[in-house]
Amino acid sequence: MVTARGLWQGAGYEHDIQPYCGFRFPAEIINQAVWLYHCFSLSLREVELTLAARGIVVSYETIHEWRLRFGRRYAKSLKRQRPKRGDKWFLDGLFVRIRGKLHYLWRAVDQHGNALDALVQSRRNTKAAKRFFRKLVKGLCYVPRVIVTDKLGSYSAAKREILPSVEHRQSRCLNNRCEVSHQPTRRRER
Image (cartoon, rainbow, N blue to C red):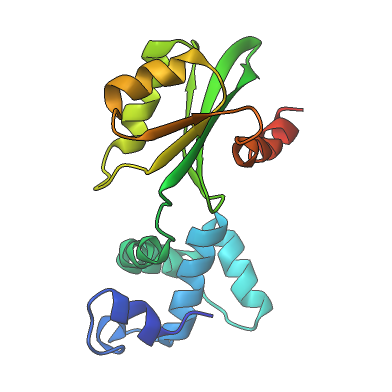
């Protein structure tokens, strides 16, 4: 369970009591309710039932108020704790059938296995690859050291224009990290 001190120190509060003044429940219970709601995509009533199973009687309206008041700060602190992107990116794509039509799912994974981004498009040409590269680089303060792809020609053309200084490795075997990350998508598609 996340303690109030750990949560609010990262958000810039000096005292762990300050944001919880005037509430009937202790900070740990409020944090637990907001954490359950945000981390597990539970409904307010499901959070209410989970807390009731632990002996804490609180209504879903109260949990809704806590979510509105503390949710944004809590989400920011979780985002700050997220691991940093690696400097070696593995890019790959796969065909996915959506409503009977074939689409192409572009995916990027770093060397630690963290999914960087995904994009679904109807085409698999250079223009689509450039759009995916721009989406990946958008908002970053750095460019990757190495990009590893399969031998699709669209990657080379897009990389030449958007990331010219980055080393590009093309191989069928080097891209296994990204290929393995497609397995959950394939299971859901079946």
